[in-house]
Amino acid sequence: MLTDIFWYLQRLGWIDIVDIILVALVFFSLLYLVRGTRAVALLRGVIFLVIGVVLLSGFIELLAFGWLIQRALPALLVAIPVVFQPELRRALEQLGRPGALFGWHSGSREVLEQALSTITDAAQTLADRHHGALIVLERQSGLQEFVESGVHLDAEISFELLLTIFDPNTTLHDGAVIVREGRVLAAACVLPLSTAFLADRQLGLRHRAGIGVTEESDAIGVIVSEERGAISITHNGRIIRNLDAKRLQKVLRAFYQPVLERESGGWLAQLRRRLGGES
Image 1 (cartoon, helix red, strand yellow):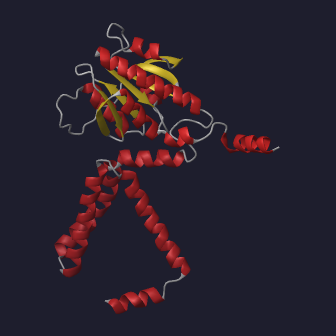
Image 2 (image 1 turned 45 degrees about the vertical axis):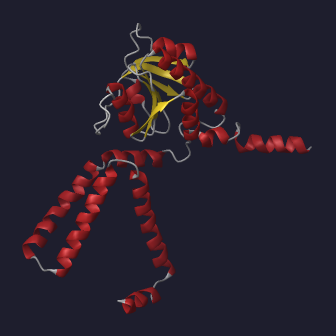
Image 3 (image 1 turned 90 degrees about the vertical axis):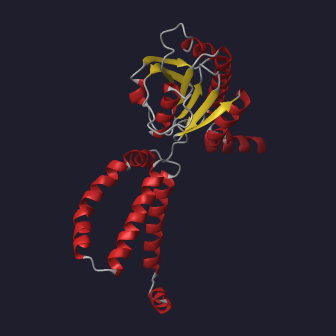
């Protein structure tokens, strides 16, 4: 066995090494894209199944079983894109936006700071009043299809606007607010519900919608429970619960840290400021 390995290693050229690295990068990218999603368990099952079939067919000559596997492979190739459709769509969206950073363009750090602060203050006030709310922050993945399901606003985000929308006496409170680049695009939006199992039965439709939209996109959801007055945040199909205003702002800033740390105006403006300071 070792002799065979050394024999192959001695005949490896630089083209073969590049080929191996490219294949490894493809597999690493696939695993990186499905991390933390429901596809991990499915992918693990597929890997175990393939390894088991290869080992079984390699040691024992099973003619009928081998014939069945050969006939089932085309169907498996068709089934894989169907089973992993959400992950494949997310991967293609990321490839289509290589220069975007969390949906906020360069030079909008002040707008982002204001939006996060406003959402934090509004969420705490709504929680104190036990007013249910669902605020979705759009990032790289576009949410236009969900925006069109609600009432179009396209208004600058403000503390008063969010409190008014989620007041139980208004007609817009039952649904989600979608925020893009510091503006409230629409209210009363309909979002997809998560089909994942939730251990806590107290989590209702608002929480399922907040989790569901993050399963299909890279958006961030801020949820205020009407019954318990608790604040939660969702991302990538996961939920962080029982947050106060301080922790909520800390988590939101962590998601947008690359944008917040970048100086507004881009590298050209930074270079001009430095040259101006030296002269």
